[in-house]
Length: 272
Image (cartoon, rainbow, N blue to C red; front, side, top):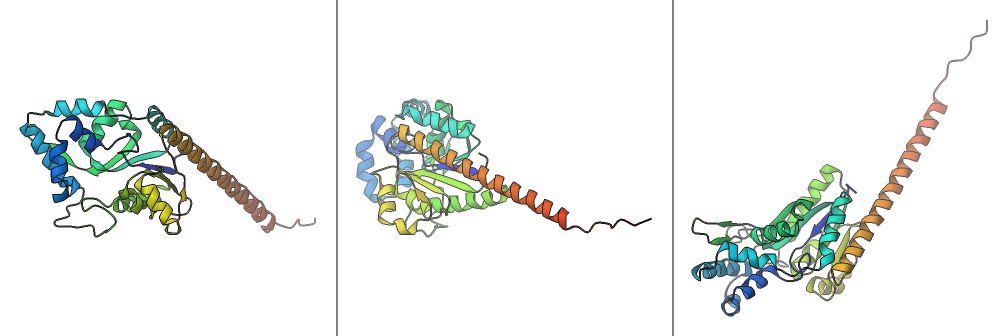
């Protein structure tokens, strides 16, 4: 259905773990990470971890190997492929980073299912060290949202997507996420949209505590199998609703045309 945009968080939504923690733990720098965590923002800390890993001789190839064995529920990949095949516009909005996400999505064979990946940028320098940057430069241009981490407010991205949706004629959004940072964008969804928080995770807790603030319908999920079932069910529901609305519009246009024809003045016959 071309009118549906599906937005996925990445960590603990597409994959079953936090990709940052996965890399830190698998490559043996957990103790240093935990030691520095109280002293700096998460995004800055991950960049610091990349410096440490490079100093220890860890290569980009080592990180790729770790990322390629990240745990993921088997039904997630099929859910994404199915939603894409149905014509939905799929996007990623994540506080991970582009190297981790792109590596994993390409390995799973689903990178081409997504029209864009919105996340923290990064680059590899000439010495082979990965640099992770903030999505928003909070030192010079803070986003001003007190619900979100300093490097990213997902609502900024959602509002931009919503603006492009209006221009492209896309009408409905489904948002899937789990973390604290997924609560803020959930507040930006409108009536007719859907939010799918992962049950018993921070976004789900915040949504349940603040239901009156949300306009979107809430559909919780627990694992990849449930995510697939609910997501495809919602896509089908929207498709049926849109088809019915289109049918009503076509019928109304037909009736209007017939009424117009009936009311149009006609030439009177001239008797001979």
